[in-house]
Length: 455
View 1 (cartoon, one colour):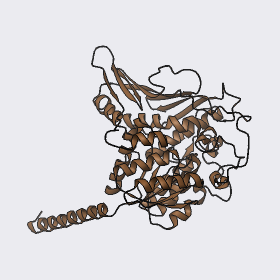
View 2: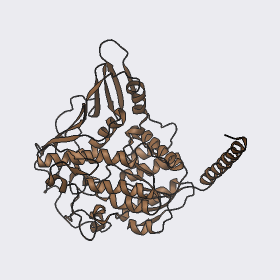
View 3: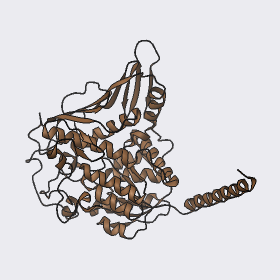
View 4: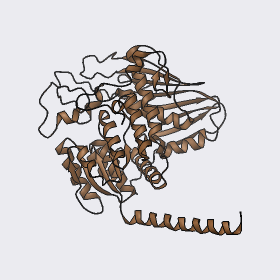
């Protein structure tokens, strides 16, 4: 490089540095403007932790339940630095039409993730979207395509990737090579989380006046209302989600994929059904096993919403087996057990009541899980960093798409009774037209599936 070129490039670098510093200062001086779609249980948890890590301005909230919406608006007014009450909306399209938001959080039931997330990135916002990405595979792919087309940052709420003690386990055990060769992992959930109410316990009825049931249903099939569904109980029905596999396996499978640097499974096979609790209104499986093949490594999922867990300390967990040791992982702890002689390692969830004064109150009032609060905060910090750097966050939409789609494929395999070999390039099932057709569900009119509209 000639001296003149060196001086010129140095001056340009200095100017860019000044501009970068100015942009950062401006961003700090002017709080990011945030909107939340779905201020229910986890919507509150996510937004309150975002406020804990940065003094953002919560501009707007949206929900089809007016009681839930107003409760959340009052709460945020009491918490955010400005003391302003967010604007409230019953329709996310009206909220996003203003194009005034820097960040949008999507914390709706699963069947409502895709359309608001796509609309949010198209409005110019970066998005934090809860897991799983979607209810069907092509819906999830449309979300990924929209994020890339608009060049927006999208973080999926698979926050095991930001859980302090699990990051520690990855660094101390896996990255350090203590497991040796790994060829098998188990992921599981033995929580009794399947709703057991019968038709007699929860009969069909008119929805409450404060809930717009038609809008809540959205693109899903319109079913009669019952008291199980709202709030939170919608997970008992496949019309609105992907059962325990989509709710719980997605976290543990994603964690194993992150820890072992795994991409798409080459094939997925699953079996199970409603084996015990046939009297309940719930139509999700109470027993299911899924095997995800990753070349020379199998990851096997099991859930059973009845009976006892094989290991009481790890009822929702991942266990990674290597020829030099075994690593047990959960949201509460981890434990490394070496094969033969060697040092046992362990760690526990980080709980920060001394640093965050509202955590105890939020646990009591809003069902915040204390052992997860630090993970949400870490996930939000990573999201904000990715926004500032215009980079991919740790749980980027593509990673969320892979983990979520793998879980959806497991449910399709269980329903069809055969193994599925998915092609991630064409997004089809090899030599299986029937299964390929099931990668996109039918939307209820007038809503249009994003894979059908080219969105």
